Length: 479
Image 1 (cartoon, rainbow, N blue to C red):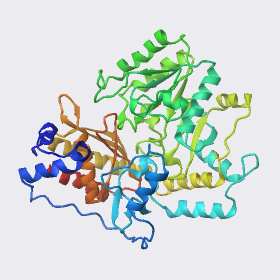
Image 2 (image 1 turned 30 degrees about the vertical axis):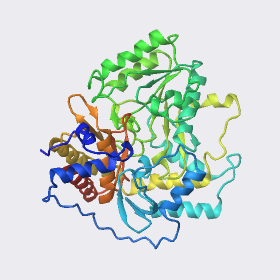
Image 3 (image 1 turned 180 degrees about the vertical axis):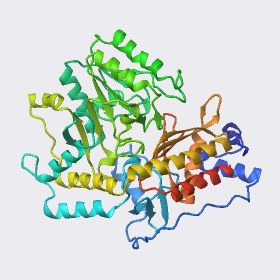
Image 4 (image 1 turned 180 degrees about the horizontal axis):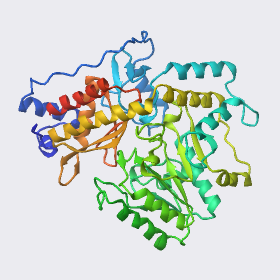
């Protein structure tokens, strides 16, 4: 087992400011302790594509313009930000033409692969024919995609309303639940993320993502987190907290319950087994609707099922989706039953760009690619293999506290103390930066920012999985 240098000792051995600790202090310690010369730098799998020469502005010029003209709330990964100028399937390219394995997929968004030819051709052809009109006129692109999308959902989930994003979809779903039930109270989970607009910020339950603005009518239940949760993997014990919230925090009747099957921003947290069936039963008894947020876990990403909620054996009343639905095109959707959808006819309600012909044509192309290339099966096979290899790394390094998730939605949580589960924040930044230098891009999440989010395009191969794990192994061995 490799020796790990505690963060406290690292900080005592360097004079650098906090801003630079994530990048420099670990290299200093590695030099003092001695490098493992027997560890070979991993080699990236071959790939038959070279991007054309890039003639645009440099990363420094772009960063300067960002600072001058874009919101200061925008942040970027890495000490030296990556200027992405080209992409093909599971790979991205920087301004120098260097190739990177994309294991983040634009935050679980690119499912078919970057610039997949079928999706690109569909977008280009539709744009040449009709870029935009309005849903007030007829166009077959929106209805064709709605039909195909509805066919992928169980039960009577047959009515689709298109939006531009997951935040919009969740906002609409919550409003529908309130209109349909005549109640205002909604139950969400602690550690959840559902968007950053007025209503969805209320349903979000991480202080990192919440401004001090009015957020009414949402109650946050105990998170059924098998790793950090108070009841471990005993889902039904967590479910009792929802019943308590209804009895002691509401009138006894509620509008609904919203949850992800796997919390994405929250750090790839799988809900404890048995939790969702028990909670859905409780919600129904209180007159509420069950909303499944499939923005990240949907569209075959979990491998075992097309939708994350299917892995729990439940059928929601409303399903929200975005990200993977368009492979990068701005597109989201709410799907519900005809009876529930009827509430929106009480007033005039539509979305100018929701259902845009270019976006919905792209969405249909994405569905066809997932089926044609058997990407769900690939997500299961490659994802299972990748999880096994990551779990083996956990046995090798004490820094890895947990490996979780399913399919190609995986999380690796770093801790400085396994027993105390102390978040390894600086170590996470260091490993992430060094993996980029090797050529692997991973995401970061969790409330403490210490979880690697691995959500690559679903065309990821076993060779890609090996390269990712070998790059992480190499980096950890050097610490």
